[in-house]
Image (cartoon, helix red, strand yellow):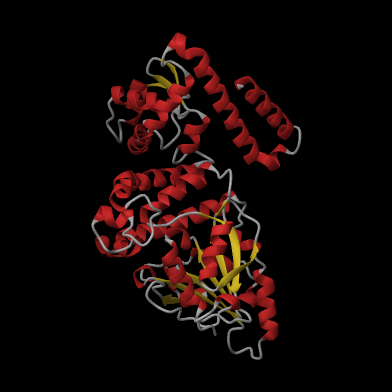
Length: 439
């Protein structure tokens, strides 16, 4: 039975590889993982009598169950400098690494050896002799300042520091029952004994320094993802220039804005700034560009955005407590907003804007990751459960469609992905607007 499975998977891999495999990279990865699992299972069957616990499948089980150890080792390696910059030589001993780190950080060679032995189990570094290691492609990718990989290294470091709160999930589910977190206090609220959501909590901590640090991280992540995609973002797929030109054609005067774009929860304005810059200057000058966020966030936007010459208008807005103040805008952008919230909160957020949308011309551009119904990537699935920390989740297209329908919207079009993001173009659905006021 196992032989048949292995042969079938090999045949499937050969079929994918013989075609345009780069276009089917995810399918190839999924099938290859299935092949590895089948081989490990066969290895277990063949060897468990002769080798007892010493087999690949059992090693994989240990690594899975003890993964917090690898996580802790990686964070420690970042903090002490082992995963910060290129080593001076390709192969180094733990003693040599300690001497190299010593001008800035005293690190015990014995500790270095213990940390790197754990990390090499995960392909981060390679152990080539006693207490002797070298970089691997993965450890190079994770290094914070390694040429060509700084962006992903910094992102992984930020995520590694941020996901520690999910460790409380088992106790949280035991307390509140094994239901998808939603209207109950979030894991973040329960763990921190606060009624404030994550963002209001950050706004009030240390004079707002936590919220400021969050927004700066979002700016860095945006720039990194845009750079990785050749200077493009998912919003570039939407025909913004054509929309602006059509709005100008319809306008009856040149003295007022011909079109309005609102970035809801737009942080420090990095997305809106890039969007405005993507338009020819004569079109951009005819538009109104509004950046909305909590007052605490807007108080710290960069001077380049706060300056009136930027062409961006700052509008304090709490989307959970207030009705959208900008009525009848052409485009309302919600980028990476709704994945942070449970369904009930998402409906409140959307309905606050739906109330003021123009049935004829307003659109919502929802920029999110659309999770595949089957075969989601490691990034998507792991981030999905981590979002559970504060009540959020990644969603499939079916789940997005159901969610926006409750707010009186429908998905008019799903634009092609750039990176992991896609734009869902939403318009009001008169069939779903029962009891709601639409402008």
